[in-house]
Length: 250
Image (cartoon, rainbow, N blue to C red; front, side, top):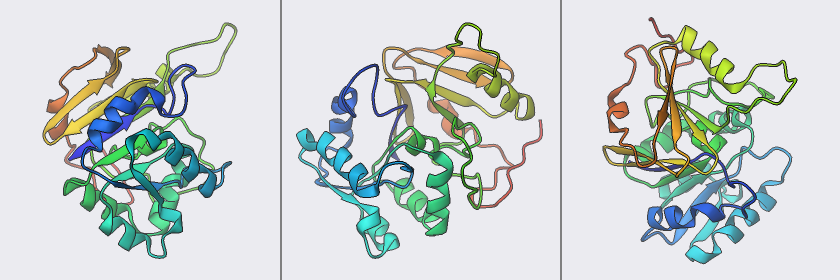
């Protein structure tokens, strides 16, 4: 597989996708057309979303086509040279993918070598399920099971910031709840400006700010360029790749 999973579309006050141009350029080497899936967008039109992504990728000289403009989503996925999935609401994104019956097809194409790029929600669905997304469940997808390209959970936009006087749950507290019920499932948390890069059987963390591993009640810092390849074989035996239910026994 060839995966580039960005935490976010921006870092700090950057322009859209600007901090990741070197990573994107390398990932799309030899690609002249990219299929973009805008379904996570809720408050932006798909056409506007497509134009935003196409404009940002102009320096790469890659033609960007929107899946929403294709008469047959299945054929578009089957013919795609590379696939990119943008951010927005993870529940809406997965709902649309199940609605069009293309979850398994995307998985097949990407595991067969088609380059995949995701950011935010688009990265979230590359994990086993979307149960560690930050988003509000504004719609109910057919399943929380995602593409399962990586046999772990992802948490893009990770931050441990807690405003003074704030009494709601922090991100760490939410992830602690997940770990309590799923102690054997690893979660890789990606601060903005970082990414996961998968090339075949190699998995690497990109970005100077590093990331974090949450597993078994513990939080561990992950340094830039850390080799995380051992996680690729960490698939829980009770994970049903396409089923409706996900069950793990501790």
